[in-house]
Length: 206
Image (cartoon, rainbow, N blue to C red; front, side, top):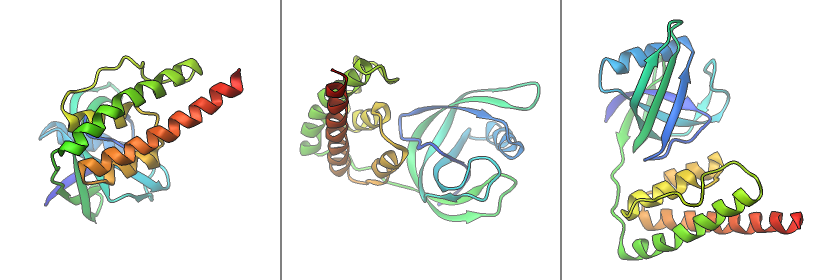
């Protein structure tokens, strides 16, 4: 268990996901100064109820460690930051703000993909590409269907979840699923539902 500075957000940070941040609240400016003098890591959890600004929010217990890739402190004290999600953590206990949120967290072990998971991953990629292509056809913002994914099935699964048009609650369900096969099965079901929904929208546009 370790004590980790925390940044609750209205966005789910998944492993292997790049997350840009504009840090303007005084407490999170202090967080940035502290972590940049240390290991450049902090935790991100999804806000369950409440708002990002001002505190007083309720938070999910499972989140992701963010590592700072690039950071620039502006003249007025704000920060422009680019981070990447690295590994999952579970909040065991929230500590008093100092002045930013702090928590005692446990890093979660990751299971390597089994043979069935590897096989299922091979079906996720074409399904994802169809979903992204339909989004593009509808004029919706999204990632091009030509996006390249890792050959590593575990990394590739996270990348599919990152680029798929999931809601924050669906992304949180993916994050909270421990076993690689179960995570891929859940993600596959979400992509099936997205494909059906987008196909229905395309038929309505004809």
